[in-house]
Amino acid sequence: MMRSSNVISSWNCNSLNIDKHAQLQCHLAQHQPTIITLTETKATPNSNKTKFSNYITYATHASSTDLSQPTGGLAILCHPSLCSSQPRPDLSASSSILWVETNLNHAAPSSSRLLLAVVYWRPTAPHLWQKISQSITNAINTNIRILVIGDFNAHHTDWCTSTDAYGSKLSEFCDNKNLVVLNTLFCPQQPTNRQSTIDLAITNHPELFTDFTVDNHHNLISDHFPISAHFSSSRPKPHPSQFHSKWDTEGKDWGWFEDVLRQKLRGWRIDEEGVGRSKERNHSCSRKNSREEESGPEFVQSLEDSAGSRHEGASPVQEARNEWRRKIREARSKSWQELCESVGSGRGKLNWAAWRRTLPTDISPTSNITNEHGDLPNNNKEALNNLASLSDETKLSDTKEEKEVKHDAREGCAAHDEQDEQEDVKEQSYVFKWEEVLEVLQRTNTRKAMGPDQISPHFLKYGCLVLAPILAKLFTFSWRHGVLPQDWTSANIHPIYKGKGKSKDNASSFRPISLTSVVVKTMEKLVVKRLWSRIAKSQLMSLHQSGFRHKRSTLEQIHILLSSIQSAVRRTTTHITAAFLDITAAFDRCWREGILAKAYRMGIKGMALRWIKAYLSNRRFRTMSLNEFSEWFTTHSGVP
Image (cartoon, rainbow, N blue to C red):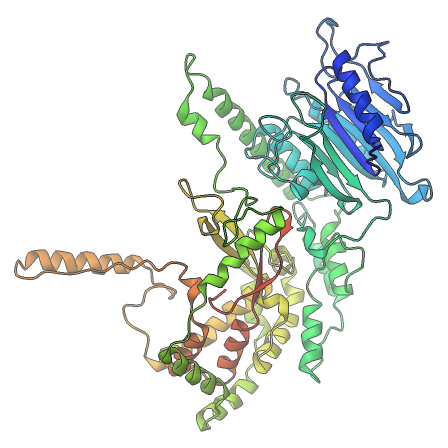
């Protein structure tokens, strides 16, 4: 007899009639799941549909005034020899959600408590969401691990291929309550019925579950596939890269955050005695994953405590801002509903223009990306590894000319002539002033994404008065010694689908967007100011260079081209030739040794050149999609 211990399954049976009752009875006898939940049983009061041998049943009957056509109906079946259970009617606020408290491990009942809920959110009853969300909130407040499983009838690109109003509400609720959708974590975009992904499992402790599957091979016949969450009674520690943290920064009291930050960082200093020890200290300033069981450094813990806690009594300005954002969300939901209704409002014909607007944007699943041999991946992580390995194709071969330039670059970084020594003396006396660091921090764009260190730009902007003096010392130390912590040379690559007509199983159909640490981005802005003065002295910058220059734009090139064409037209005996170049993966193919050699020729020497070399060296990246990451890959060409 097959036995599926440590499994919590769920099945939308769509009316538990005699045939489906027999199917489920055979399934329970063969597989023996620890718990199985049922939705849409359509069982009437005093019905024995949900009774099964060897299982304890908790059920609600169908909610309909016309019992000839009942709808809904929930059931939770618990195997008494595999887990103990008891009902929780205090949490079941409506007939659309049913709660049971279970102990998944008889040997350690106190550490294996789980509040399990089965949900059926009917698409024809959107008003039930308020009761369902309040019920889940009450369960979270008990400080017991929860798992909410069932048919949500909600679409969102985090777990599905499209988004609707219900999915937006559910996704926002999960973000606010720090809940994780297991579909997103283990098998995103995998359909749970014949059309889309609407049967979900949601938890606040994803480390409890080792796997989540959509069981489309089982003999339970319905318009929905059974889903199964596989748990471990020993609670294994999750992989640090398995979860992508998301800070809750909306409506926080940042004045209080600044006070806590000042208290925690009092007496902070850099150990000037050794570069290695300082690098380790700098590296420890990155935030550890919020799902790790180990506590992070005191500095990191202070950020989590101060930014992750709500300050009681929000100001009138904050309340007004929150109300405004709430109305914006309601307006967007209403607009989405009107758009969906307009799809079929063409007098029996489909409104194709409205239908195209409902399609997902440039977010596209990356689970089918093949490797260099054209083989499909076995899982999502392997697909992300295939995408990351594309960077190896951008490596450049060493020609004779390239070897000479590499030699010049190495000599430039190592050589110290008289002029370099004089510049080093000047650089030793130069420090990054905390006032200029403060100016950059105050202009930090809080809408920018975080890097691998998970430090939010909100921390830099709203803690700028405390962090500016510390970062000024940290930047000065990095500049003088030519060292950077590993977090500053790491990047998360977010793939963006290039558009229609591109093959979604080809890595070249995705545009890589590099997300680096917001701390090193702050230093980059300060370094650019320092380098431009040297470049201006060299007078080697072309007058026609418009890109990446202050108060210059590539529109100038268009005006120059237009002026040249008009001039050639006026002179009938003159013609003009134009060549347009579009280099594939230009930034990914940048030759680092060549960059260093050209920087040396333009007057960037001494500490400046050594810092740039350290900034371009030892770089690594990993691709990310939703809550999954690839392995770390090193890159030897390109710029961040």
